[in-house]
Amino acid sequence: MEEWAEQLQNSVNTLERLKSVINVTEEEEIAIRTLNTKWGTTPYFASLMDPDDPECPIRRQVIPSLKEKENRYGIPNYLIWKENRDTDEVRPDSIARQYHDRIAFTVTDLCANYCRHCFRKELVVDRNLQLRFDVDEGLAWIKEHEEIRDVLITGGDPFILSDDKIEYLIRKLREIPHIQMFRFGSRTPVVLPHRITDGLKKVLSGYHQVPIWLNTQCNHPKEITEKTAKAVFDLLSCGVNVGNQAVLLKGINDNKETFRELHQKLLSVRIRPYYVFYCEPAPGIDHFRTPVEKGAELIRDAIRGHTTGLAQPMYVVATKIGKIPLMPDYYIQGKTENEYTLRNYKGQTIKWPNIPE
Ligand SMILES: *Cc1c(COP(=O)(O)O)cnc(C)c1O
Ligand code: SF4
Image 1 (cartoon, helix red, strand yellow):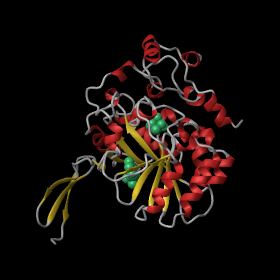
Image 2 (cartoon, helix red, strand yellow):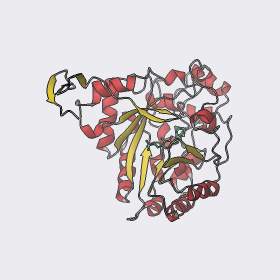
Image 3 (cartoon, rainbow, N blue to C red):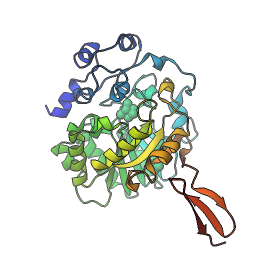
Image 4 (spheres, rainbow, N blue to C red):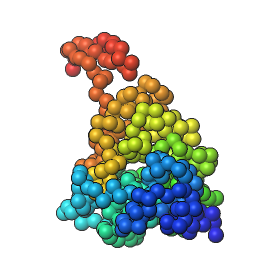
């Protein structure tokens, strides 16, 4: 058996296994025993947890919490609403649509790590929403819709699928003439870097007219190891661009130092920050959420001007009508017909001539 499959087989998903890795607190134990929820991670990702600190940023993403029972601000049936599944357009369960030219294609509900903050929690983690993920049905829909030029293959985690299934997906998508690119959303480079095997590299690689992009999810600098660095290098060396989509998580990455270090460290392992998402109003994840403006403040105070421009993600609120960017709003201090007053990250201002329309 390949190492990545062994990692999945030995998933740390029982109290007994968890106790062999960390000192489980009483509260964690009660949550695991009483919450009816899917949880677990790879032995590799589990090994990055602090055995003694329940506030460890990795531990909080892995171990269920009693706070998941609270839901003051979440929207019920969130995923149905968010993914526009109750609209008139008839689509297979696997297709979520918010835009004219691109869609999200869900191909599995399995993951290597069942993130406690997952916005697809109802489907992936709590499992009280069942959808049908028929790959051929989804491919047929995409083939019929010539306006679709970009497909985001998501889950769950699509890299949990076998090499053969991934090869099939890629081949079929590349046969559709209107598909110009596609992307995978996979957390495996972070939670299961062993997944980037020679076999998978063969499936992904090649100079091809229809490029593959990959966006992973890394939320804290502690998640980045030499193994992740190697997996990303391997992906890049077979022509797959690698980006990051972090989630803004209260108590995990919502302070200036961690936020800056995360984005600098991503670049140091060749991952380009793409998005930072506001943590979505799915039920049971209130305890991970910050005020909406927090992400824009962090970009203003920790990133823009304070470090390499490439380290700057776009902060977005992912809504059912698309992703809405929230930019720090201090740049334009004033404006007349011929002149702007612009402000930089240090608070200095400069006059800038404008050309009237
Ligand atoms: C996020 C998302 C996309 C892709 O958005 P980009 O801004 O192009 O990365 C497309 N469709 C759905 C349903 C999405 O949630
Ligand atoms: S890997 Fe993605 S889909 Fe899976 S639990 Fe984590 S956030 Fe949810």
